[in-house]
Image (cartoon, rainbow, N blue to C red; front, side, top):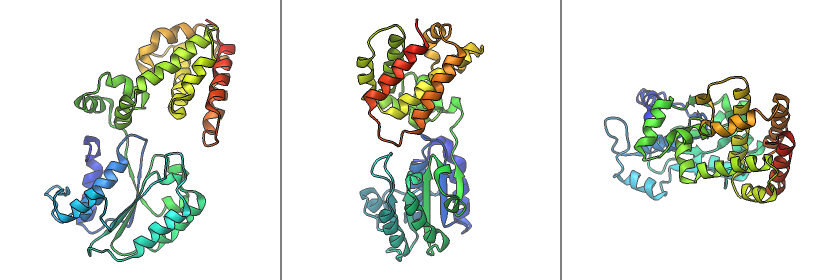
Length: 322
């Protein structure tokens, strides 16, 4: 599927393809939730389809499309980490590169997609360099990354970058409403303007998870038990919670500086934010933010989530009392 906010990228690549100028390597970059991987799959399907329509879209019915649908097309290679927080291993990259060097079994183009490409470790990235430097004829390598700065410069410089920005707020809200999402503005705020991330959050009870965090902060500030809240938070995906906690602190700073409530990430919790903003100093907020940032930077290191949240809630209690 090509999402409404991806039309310009699609038209640009279709034009290059028709002119025979499609590069051998592409880097799809942009924040999480803009549909980069979906776009990569859609592009690869169109390149392998035997009966494209007038807009260059795959027909979905030819033999090539049926093989793609079954996940058995020999000229389409997919590689991604076992989990979002796992590394892409060097052996997997070597195997992909070997497959890319083989002749297309259907006499056309051979396409490889590496999703979450910034998860490649150093050895894996180095193994990819030779394929980028000496690409096989009639082949296309697509790297998909929400954190392209983590890729070595030697990799980035050998790919043509295609940027995927979040659509404007109105377009995102209209699309989310068309998907039947209730309270789309809240989910869009919590996903930093990424419509697909917002939709995924709604499917995973993101608003309820965010409320669990805020309830824990309010209760911890009023001398209520911390351990039970820490246990609840330890069962929720850490990255989302830590990001929302950072946004909570940023919202408090903005309120103290007189910003409009509509600009806040947690705007629907303005009553709670205003109450706390008058009970904590700006210095206390920045000190707590420093502590939080240290934890966020260390997320790749295994942590005991229960102890982490106990520490964060105790520290929060020390900075603020309602």
